[in-house]
Amino acid sequence: MPTDMLQMASKFPEQIKEAYELGRNVRVPKKSFKNIIVAGMGGSGIGGDLLASWLNPRSSIPAWVNRDYTLPAFAGPETLLFAVSYSGNTEETLSAFRDGVRRGCTIIGITSGGKLGRECTTSIRIPRDMQPRTAIAYLLFPMIGVLDGLGVVEADEEVQESIAINGRSRDRLNEDAKRIARELTGIPVIYGHTIYAPIAKRIRCQFNENAKILARDDNFPEMCHNDIMGWPNAGWTVILLRSADEAPYLARRIEVTKELAFGDVKVIELWAKGNSPLARMTYLLYLGDLISIHLALQKGADPTSTEIIGELKRRLA
Ligand code: PA5
Image 1 (cartoon, rainbow, N blue to C red):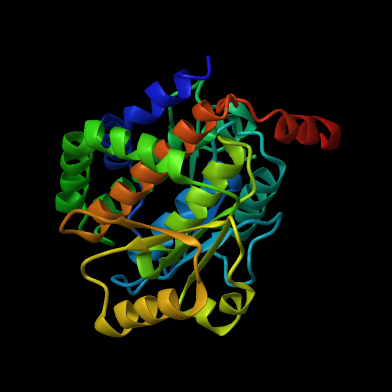
Image 2 (tube, rainbow, N blue to C red; image 1 turned 45 degrees about the vertical axis):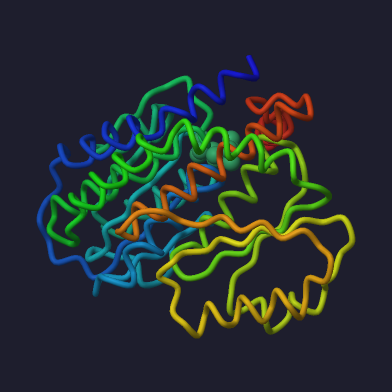
């Protein structure tokens, strides 16, 4: 049912709570890890982008996202590798996981089953029968739970705030999302910055997969050095991810870009809410997900189906 996606996505705050606990409860040998790699594709890989953009500004252990069949040369016994595949059968992720085994990485699988579930000795089992993209809480928060448990980062307060703010905001976000979806015209171009860069990408992918439309994403300040020359595009929509804690130099750059580049193009600003970075990131992620689903429903598309992705995988298998 097309509306199942909306119901599933609405449970995001409860899913965060459950997913974080899954990560907190897993036993990982305490080692001094030099780096963290997240191997995953599509809806499973985006959790790695979110983790890296949240973690890297605060941790001396860098996180790297791997969307390929093999791992980078620095992967080895001092690497903590999260192999993330909702189905557990994604070719690239399985190959990277096996590469991690050969290189002696400490590996934690995050999956609902499949080959990864069978092959990975330490794997966090997440609920089955979801679309990977509706399982985003389960594809991100177990990693945060593991890292908190290992003492790599202190996450508890931020996770609790994320659950609370998204739970409190659910009805209003849903109403806002419905209205914003009606305002979109042409190709939406979503711009993020800093920790919100992967949120822009997530929203773009949600527009692709849920609403079945093309969309683009880019980030400040990089867009000011290239993308800005492509505007204005009549009929398209600009979506800016904004946050009250933007550095003054960034806020000014965004304002000047609005004046200079977009002309008469419709600009929609989505403002993050919350005190902590994780709460603000998840708030925008939740809003973006809901917009994409309402857009699908308004244009009569089924947000749950991803037939072409499935057919491609079948042909390549
Ligand atoms: O949203 C989707 O269905 C895809 O982007 C999948 O997440 C992607 O193909 C990878 O599959 P999996 O998440 O099962 O590893």
